[in-house]
Image 1 (cartoon, rainbow, N blue to C red):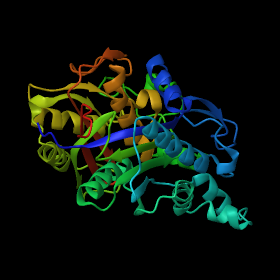
Image 2 (image 1 turned 180 degrees about the vertical axis):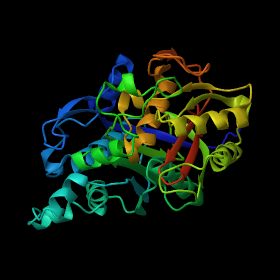
Image 3 (image 1 turned 45 degrees about the horizontal axis):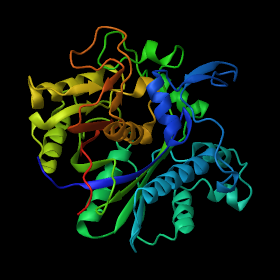
Image 4 (image 1 turned 90 degrees about the horizontal axis):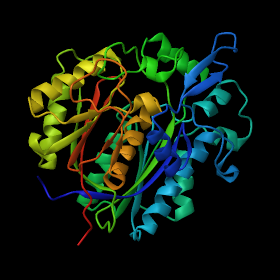
Length: 388
């Protein structure tokens, strides 16, 4: 296994469980879904839906909407956390924002002609929260947005790693933010027969188990501080890969060839063999095609030496662009908390599927994300190593 890697030395999380990293962790370990019944999602505005939506909160000074507040809160918590762990920012701190729909609440108002003040209009631009974040902390490194549907966060983490290795930045803050669950967006995913909102999530979303119908919609904002000089990292980002199906706007290539190639190339990039991987932190949407794709690469790449398997969407929901980020945060916290906060097995499942909270044995974790449109990604995460 390669001894290279970039340390992730700070974490911040806003999720359907609430505001803050510890609230998130406690919610995951409760074994209960972050989703709750929220009204106003039917055609007549009265129906309720099971959604892991971020609750009201945040700093009013961070903006008029929850998107900007959650973005700033997750990034700020990650900075404070990293500083407490001995991180000192370099002269060139870069920021990468991973997003998809951006601030759908703001764009909803723009499209209706209600954003009449300049700040209401500017709020809708995806560049705005990144600009305000860099202003607050006086960061002057590179900044941009990554958008690769549900693989956005993984793409951002790999880009950050490349910046650090190429000397384009001294440190990088990655912030993934997706609060896009307007009634229109939820209806779109339900219409695609991907999202399920009419029953409790763990009755509908059963990744790698029989009887699964799809995923509960979710929201999250997650911040990471990456540094080659981490003194007390949560875990090391060892490597990864990205491929594209080039097949369909929503469906996956049924051969799964590019998913398999992505995992194979990620392991080679990280210098990791099949025998080194202890866990698969799966994309795990609970949809038939995603389940088949991940089982395919488990069989092809790992054979009989398959890692333990867990999927977190029954708990946190499918957070779209932030899906990989919120799941990666849980996987990284497992290295210090010594627990995998896996969701419960509720029906016949894959033989390697973890059932609820499980002691964490360390080693390497493979994190996969597969975005609508064929955006495949895989990251390898390893135990923390302090910089020399």
